[in-house]
Image 1 (tube, rainbow, N blue to C red):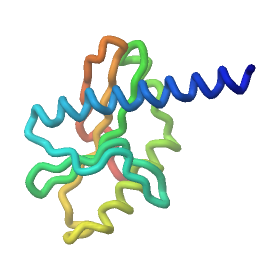
Image 2 (tube, one colour; image 1 turned 180 degrees about the horizontal axis):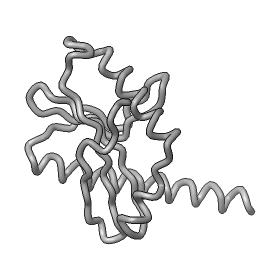
Image 3 (cartoon, rainbow, N blue to C red; image 1 turned 120 degrees about the vertical axis):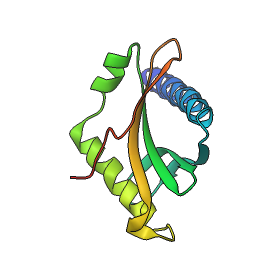
Image 4 (tube, rainbow, N blue to C red; image 1 turned 90 degrees about the horizontal axis):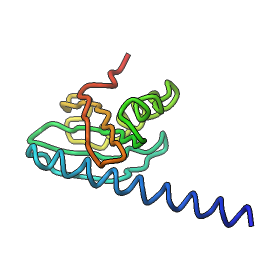
Length: 125
């Protein structure tokens, strides 16, 4: 029984995450960006969204919770490092490589489906 409940919770979290990513993707598309990849996976980790506008690539980590503050609290230093590493790995596939104009954003989604975008939230050290 516990496994069934755990599996159900995992499925609910997965679908809630996908719904949050959809909300965030629409917000970026409303600002003229194009979704290039959803849940891009490399050896270093996963990028929730990879967006493009002209020559710029924007990596977005999506966090959903009851409130924006609670969503922001879910971002841990080790996770930020994995996101930066995955972004670097992705950039290695780009024609301009490290010269590619990039930005690392965090998008927070609350229970009402509202989106708050923090541009340049993660910057390489």
